[in-house]
Length: 275
Image 1 (tube, rainbow, N blue to C red):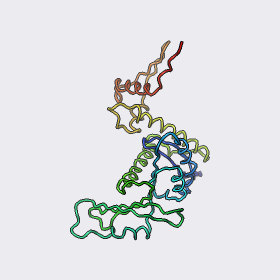
Image 2: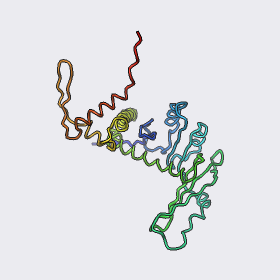
Image 3: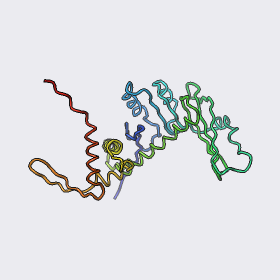
Image 4: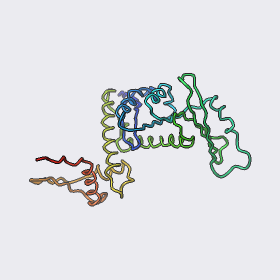
């Protein structure tokens, strides 16, 4: 018996609320930034004229000069991790010397700003460096961020660090939606399946962010699925209505009523009729 297994490398763009703006399925052997134009540009077009400021942050795999030029041309502020190299290390050499004296029982952080231009860059750009001396570690942790923001270095790092929430969104999709299960035979079929998973994820995230009462506000999407959506119910049909009879073990009746009320309030009010 012979089995064939294909690997895929999906690309996701999330907003700050955890909504999946756009996704694309790619072969598993492509670079992490491959195809960014077809995904990111459509998101930017959607928001043109709708919001005053757009911010973009991502990991070192997206340290691409073409991406920098595009974001700057669109007036988008960005903070993107920059892979370390010898020239960058030299610029912050004064911060890489171990502090003199007895090590403190706390993390020591230092920041630096400088202008840098790599060989393929169209112009010099601002680079922010962060150096951390962790307790009990012999060497510092060093990170570089390329940015076009004018904020203080510490604030730029804080903006970039929020990128970690994107990983949580991806893990939420893996746990609740199982969007890594792409078991169709063809690439096209799996690409469609990923989009269906993306739709299910967004519906679940809308429920989590827009229609969850305060007692369950911190529930993850997986918990909502197991305790609210994926539960058994007895359907009783009558002449004029259909009743769903569900146990109150996970969601009390009052809480379920609050969820339905919050969903109803999302609908726009009816237009006033004129005589």
